[in-house]
Length: 95
Image (cartoon, rainbow, N blue to C red; front, side, top):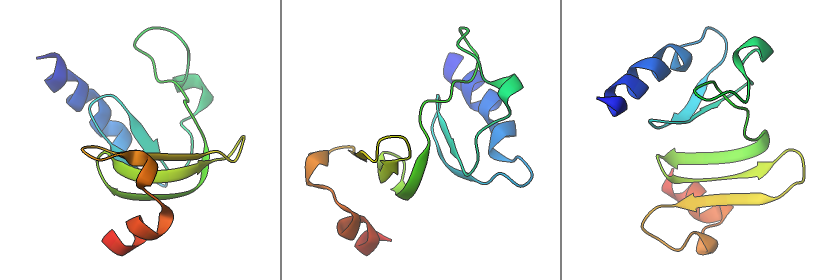
């Protein structure tokens, strides 16, 4: 029931006019632009801004990489594989 509620509560944010949803799962959402400040807080249950990125490739859930906008750090996620081996070229080929 909790997972169903989480999916239902995230759906309105996947369809925001002018703010494309790039990727999501039950508990997180990657949007083209940040949510408005009045929606983001550190309170339990509220949306949090975890990171901003400048470049990214999102192939499917749990298979993506991006560059952090603040410190230029390269992040990668590859469920079922050693993510340290994933790079830009590999993901571009998969698209």
